[in-house]
Image: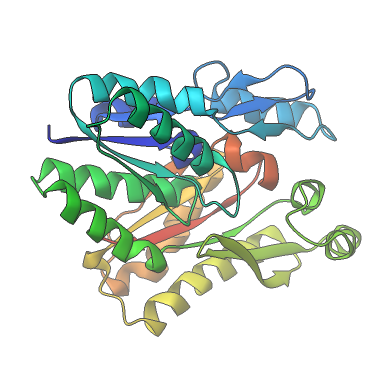
Length: 294
């Protein structure tokens, strides 16, 4: 192995997938009472996180990003062995995780002057960040040299999109991710928002009246992006991210495959959205992540 891939836990890949691809994960922290914080995945499982939100309606959990020391502890293991590191972090527009990683890099430089660490702002998050991290692993495993791998990863960030919907605006409103008036209006009308994430920021695409229609419209947003860019799907990664309900994700996948067959899509991976983003979306986010291969 020529270099180690590190990511904060916003990437939302399972423990098994992270181990299989030799990814070092630096966890976010999550709290339901603003006092006790647990490490995502390590101390509170994603399923338990969602179950608690479903069981305790009106409770709004919070997250805290990894500290510089958390990143330092991971970086140091590889610095001691003279293994270079590519560290991929959630969009800086969502979290200060990357600043913690940069601080840790500076600390490592004092103790291990020859250490080589590149910290990348992925400009994305959740399962889309996971696919970006998997691209980094693929480059590493195919023998692409360190500096070229970094360049190729930076070149594909702009192509990343998330098209998704949520069950309620309440969590976005509570977390300050949308204007309060927009949130109140949406709550009163009981509408379902369609949201696009690009270049690290969320944008409202439109609103619809019910869940079924919102799922159909999410597929339409993806198709519009594919057609607008004349995308060859063999050159892109595509996945579905979901929250609490795996069964709904399976149904959504079947619905999507019917529409996407003509674009050469034969299967779509399902990844569960973790607590880092789940605190903002609530228990019922669902949608697509798509990004160009490196």
